[in-house]
Image (cartoon, rainbow, N blue to C red; front, side):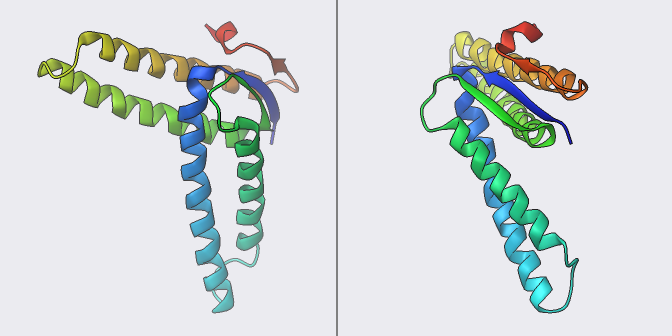
Length: 148
């Protein structure tokens, strides 16, 4: 699995962090279920360790993201970043749909739709950049705007 390093702009750190927290929660629950299955003689013997490894990777990614919305240099396995960015993109798309619906009904100004759409596009660019980096043997990118 490719390991990549790239910068996440400040305005995307929060949405990515929220997704990483959800992934952490889901992986912890999966670990719990796999340990229970293992204790009952069911399931794969390797599954608990795979979940522990993923939890450790997610913990490291959370440490890199920090708790303040400033741009962050992330270095992690490409598949882990892909899951985080793609999840954030899906969530942003859902927010865009809700915002557009509210704006159509006159509950929100059109400016809010434009802001939500800008977030979707920025996450899409970040995901595209990640995919191009993962295809290379090794590359470090300093600015996600280069994917433009």
